[in-house]
Image (tube, rainbow, N blue to C red; front, side, top):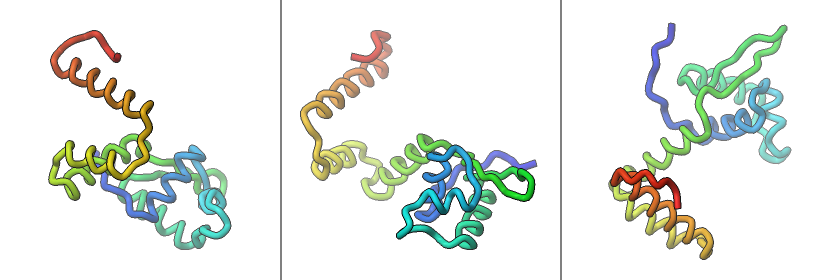
Length: 137
């Protein structure tokens, strides 16, 4: 029986496959390949090998249906997103959330509506941290 292990960040190639599996829900090697645009479709054997490695890492699993392996993601898009942001925060910004957010705001095209939403989220988060149960907004 496999013990629960820490989720690792997927490589770029693994991430492309995960995104296909998230979009599809599940799929064969052929399904994953066909999910990419014709100009960026990976090789069959390469995709198959990467999926096997992803299984070893706990990122994907398969079941056999007839003579076909059908793969499913074992991690959610949200979990990988959080893990990626946490990694970015510590690797690139020394753990400073402020520096990460300032950089994001300076390099993104954030409109007034998005800024208001961010301000509202910050107020809501602050209330939650202070034990106020008024909820969002």
